[in-house]
Image 1: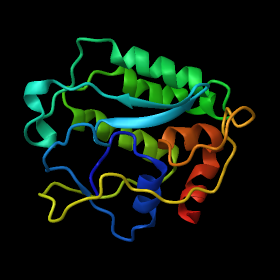
Image 2 (image 1 turned 90 degrees about the vertical axis):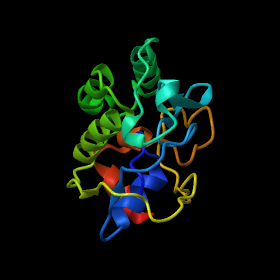
Image 3 (image 1 turned 45 degrees about the vertical axis):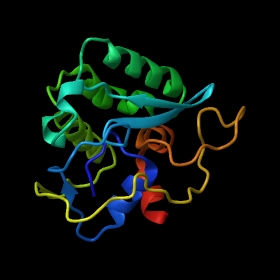
Length: 185
């Protein structure tokens, strides 16, 4: 599996159910994919967020893609996450850990994704799995998808259940039960 930015519910479910999971880090960067994008749900519906990258660094190895700090993307994204999940049952419990990654400066996208992956593993109470730094021997589907059973979401009294959002949605809404939910899919 490729190490992705945040990761959706299908990514994390597949990752946790794999007996010998391996995250591949040494592959070519693909623009507009899960390496730099994730989705949350807001009062207005799904919101796709993207970590901005420096254009000149996108045409090569994932490990060499640099984050673009010319905009205040960290503040904007964390504000969106906060506005979307502030009323969720477990936001206050996890906000400091997760928010710290968004407030830190990371030179490359890979550094940001690794830092976030470690924090999310900690939130889900899963051990970190080996990361194999080698070329990817096969093609990957652009988006993993599994059928989600509905779980309580912040805006479920005003909108229908949104499936396969980023793991942030599941963590902030289910807290310690998030891991059990993922392995049950």
